[in-house]
Image (cartoon, rainbow, N blue to C red; front, side, top):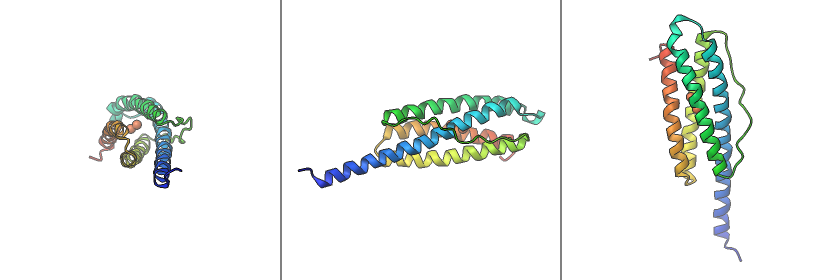
Length: 153
Ligand SMILES: [Fe+2]
Ligand SMILES: [Fe+2]
């Protein structure tokens, strides 16, 4: 006879793992979206006042790709399937608007990774929470770059 307490605990841990995989796939779709936006924005950004930020956006694009690769690896490690779904990318012809769109996106990304770190820790996935902490440090740098470019700091 199986012990119902153990069975309950196993079921709870399986469902928390599934929830974690679902959340990480949301993060992965968000990273795909960020890659697309930074590739396009960095090559179309116009205006002398935005000279430096175009180069920074190119760097953001390659860092978002590294995040996507890491998140996909973590999903696979947890036994999930990395998503092929991309969240709809946003675009504006207006440079300032473009930067504001990116800033809003970075802030949403940071909020989600914070939640994911707590979720990973509740599930006892400490290596994952460490990996997400490394990613969030770079997202915070992206947020700062965008705030600087927009004169918000
Ligand atoms: Fe990212
Ligand atoms: Fe970012």
